[in-house]
Length: 618
Image (cartoon, rainbow, N blue to C red; front, side, top):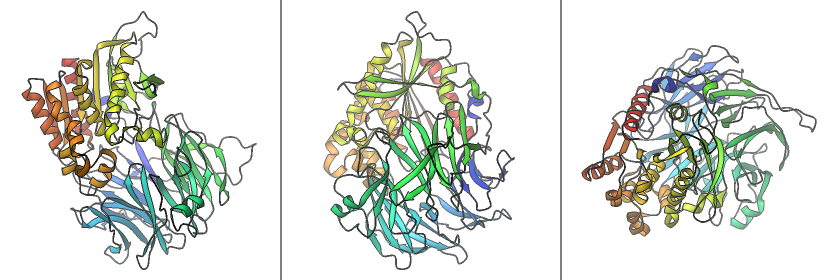
């Protein structure tokens, strides 16, 4: 590869918008090489940097009263976030929590803007409790102790500030909601249900008598639903009182924001990975009037409303648009004659050393897998490679997403363009188990069906080898996190398909992974993968470490020493085992990174090393 890596990875991004009552915008930007807090006073204005750390900032949220901004920051990408308050008038920063052994998961502002709520595992590493904190009086107050291990998050305050709604994620496809009394800490379970049901992004409705959230309770795909709190007494009553407000049909509603006081509403629909943004308002408790908003063809996330609901902000990304913040004004009335609602681009992050019009957009394709199912994927050929039978053959990177409840979508990815300009095709499949295609599809790889998703990858390579543009001897397996496991599984189960492999923070041994992952994660992950108590023999059987002698292709392994999700021991054991077999292995461990490579210099070094590795072996 002769392309210069650095010019691709100097492309900047702006994400996580949050609106102040006076119209200002705060957001996260990686302009300095690590993500920091910035603010802008108006669209296109030169933004002001507000934080100046060597470590990344993970979130930012502006108080509904306007006088404070809260943000989170970890150390060495260890995900042990501490909370901080920024005074936007003076730029003074106050540290709110100082417990480096604990994770503080941001929750929500009290409606008055003087109090916050969040979840943290301060009491027990495996358990998240609910905390509240008066910003003018000091220490966090333990409001409600959890009686279960695992993920818990504070979603929203009630409109009167007397209650909180809390979400417990039991598995990737199973959630529960609780209403917590802000004075007593008393907790009420409001979503008892049978089977697995998702309840995401809950918020109290305008009168506080109902919750609105995204759920697949009534359909295979997530919808915007309303849960009547008075009727939510048992599983049957919850099922009867959960009414669909907005359906996406066969596609999921994957994001929404609601202003309880006004009923103003914004939501996004995930159509084969592309986002549709609609804005409007509730017309009654279970109906909404919505109009399309004008956005580029790409992906919308970080959807949020301002304190009065008059403006909606979101991050928009596309193959040829680096992550930028767009703002729209939801209409007062929605009618059939209303044209698409215009949006205004507030941030224009630098594209780096490659012009945006040089970025290529992928083609959405589907290929048939072993059981006749159609698997969606994004496929991109380098410029100049012909579509017909008379063409030159190029190598291909099979780029497998993590999760597994995740989805490869058409957002801005400099590494995709780097590979294309270096002469590689790029193939990005959404194998069974991916999100975005409904509950049934997401469950197709659960526990004993795990290896069916690896069979989907093998069938993808067969499909690619039938393309006259693809060099059948130049196929690269490439993936991060769970995608790293998929890479290791693919090169052990189907060793003859691959010319090389790149494994980022991947799982080599399911048993050691589950034994050593963060205490708060274990129960959630076991629900997806199988438990050590009940499924140990199966987990051993599908662990790539036990089939490492099957690996034929050179392997690149990357990890962060501070990774709390997939411990770095997973990288070290697979690298040592493969090297002992005489197969070329290159290992890169960053001592100041975790599950994600957060620092620009490290990202550049990582991809320069990968480029040289593929130069040598592919």
